[in-house]
Length: 229
Image: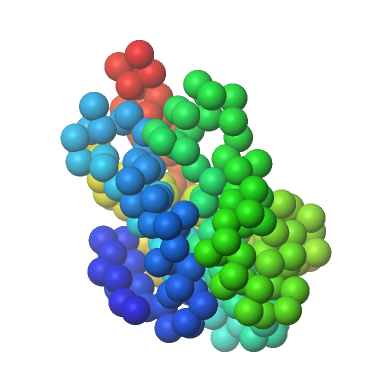
């Protein structure tokens, strides 16, 4: 399975279970949920979805781990890598309509819903149960239980692949004229020190750019008074 993507160019998913997870109704519904809620009223092209972002986080996780392993900063078993990639795919499975806007209106946190969906959705359960312990291990990562500390750090830490994907993705679909981060340079500068994901001096330029992107997207995007109103 190959998907064209504006941020990562091409995303290849070869694992049969992951392909089947993407085809489930629970995952496909993410294609109808806007990543930035109602920001498209201000930026008409901000129609990108949680589906695209979820595939992007999967790809970012794969690239970051492969880079860290290649440079001898990390060792993961084949099973751990697989658990991490599936957790990356499913990390936003609980989002409702209009993403975070829905959370504020309904009082329902998407973190609670992803646990229910993974535990109760028959399609997803049947796929994860093909591999012993997989469903419990994926839930432990998404629930922050720290059994897979390094995987959680890469997925959701201060330099998380979740953030690295959505800042560039949100910027790409906005009308804001700012350069994106160079993700290849950034990935190559990442290291593991004391079980934390850190960035080398060569990557500071990209982090500085990320801060500019975050500020611009808030002031001129999802934090703009028109969007909030």
